[in-house]
Image (cartoon, rainbow, N blue to C red; front, side, top):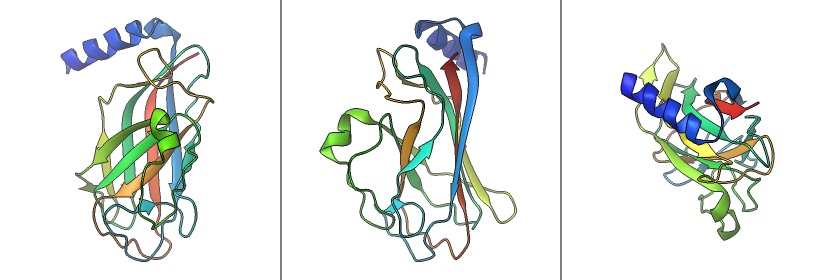
Length: 180
């Protein structure tokens, strides 16, 4: 635990600002996926719509940087499917549609971060949650992918065959630090 803290502090300092110049950030998106079965490799998004979701993460554009420290997915249907979370530092230009096979568009290759893979969910009654900490993924730095706005975008990709059911929700949360 102490080693992880020291590593995180060193990484923050290497991004060009002291720990005091950073703000803790958290961004949350919740959506209702399709009630029909998904297959492995399909995009998961709001039923019948674009699977691209926006997180207002306050990653500074231009100078500065942000550090994603943790990510969490809550599935209130209790499926707890294996999924990959692909982050983008600019709005994706490819077509990523709910329940369509997900293929990364060539134009999006320079802006993608990921995947962040969720493979182990814990039951909280019916809902299941998966949380990954100590990610330390840098964005908008010389060593990371530059961002064009204060948001990041994401697409979830199924790595199983979940059926979420009507009116169930998926919640995605990112936590991290950004320059003031």
